[in-house]
Length: 119
Image 1 (cartoon, rainbow, N blue to C red):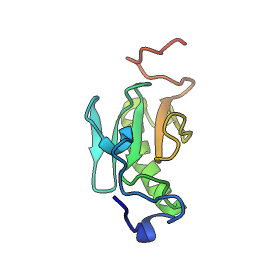
Image 2 (cartoon, helix red, strand yellow; image 1 turned 120 degrees about the vertical axis):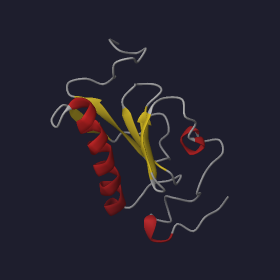
Image 3 (tube, rainbow, N blue to C red; image 1 turned 60 degrees about the horizontal axis):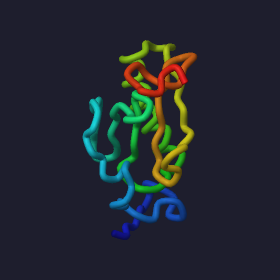
Image 4 (cartoon, one colour; image 1 turned 90 degrees about the vertical axis):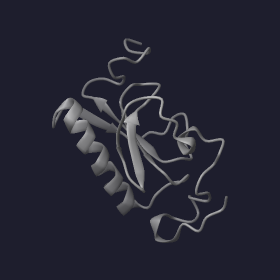
């Protein structure tokens, strides 16, 4: 499905509203969800068990929207880890073409419950 992204993104980076092959577009509820609205959702990542925010549009948002999305992630992270108990990891390692970011515990990478904790 092709979509005109208008003012929500740079049209060079957000070509599709969704991609049925993209795990973030399908948004299966495999873990606890903390927040959702028409723009994004925040849930625990199935790989690292940390809060992860996902923009619903497949692509990359413009800077102002990205800041708004990160503010939503930081609200969830503050509840889980405390005001200074986390860091935001914007690196998109496994799915680089769909914007998302993780809130990781201060001094760590994986959350409690991840099978990768301690690696």
